[in-house]
Image (cartoon, rainbow over all chains, first blue to last red):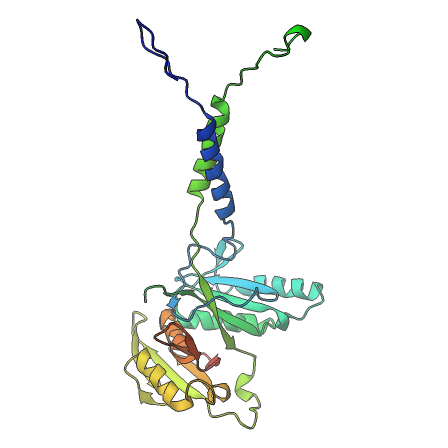
Amino acid sequence: MARMNRDGPSKTDIDMTPMIDMTFQLITFFVFTLNFSTAVQDDRVQLPTSQLAKPAEGPSVDPITLQLMSDGRVIYAGEPVSLQEIGGYLENEKRVMIASSKEPNAATVIVRADGRSKTGDVQELIKACQEKGFEKFVLRAQYDESK
Amino acid sequence: MAATRESLADKIAIDMTPMIDVVFQLITFFMLTLKTVITEGDFDIRMPLGASAGIASEDQLPPVRVRMTAGPGGERTSLTMNGQPVADFEELRRRIVDLVGAGPGSNADKTEVELDCDPDLSYDNVIQAVTAVSGQVQPDGSVVELIKKIKFAPPKKK
């Protein structure tokens, strides 16, 4: 593929096809592993670890994910709000349920609380949900792979 | 650029540089937004309002009361089960297994655990307690289920 010239530098033809193939392979890989779900899995919340935290059999029915940070604020719609304000947003969630002809107690509230947060804050959050009529709760933890 | 009828066999030279540039931009974007997902699992807790006044079914055994107190930084200062001090969560699990038995024929279905924690206690301890009472990981990796019904005691006022 290299041309030999007697005087002057030789030119080389590079075949671009394999390079472009590889590049498209890489893109395809990244497209399939892209994850936009910070609404249900924000990085600001570090879940506590547990060896028994195996994923549930299937997705929950009508899940509502609440993320509690270590400082006691709740992430709602991507922004932290205080525990006092979360009642208003929970009222919205309740109205959405009722508008779909479902009772709030049919929803499952997924509590993603940071391992460093206070138990009292978690209990306050649960109580705020109970006041709006939510009854099913799950506490989420991340699987402990260390053992 | 258009070929006349006589020279349809002329090749059109496509400049690949902009296409490759855009492709590398895309790769860089996807590389920077890549996020590894850690497996997450759920623990069910029962929290209907007025649970403390709930009617227990006839064969419900009395609830196991696990109490944890907290120090100023949220660290766990004591762990008791039904009033008796427990050294760590492994011992808590052993006592639960002794109490209800493990595997078929165990009383785990009829037993409930009530978690009573100081409000300032680090939440990590709660999950460790729930893990200790919910199941036991066997040496071969399988999990023996213990108590499934877990609830919180009413919160204490600060």
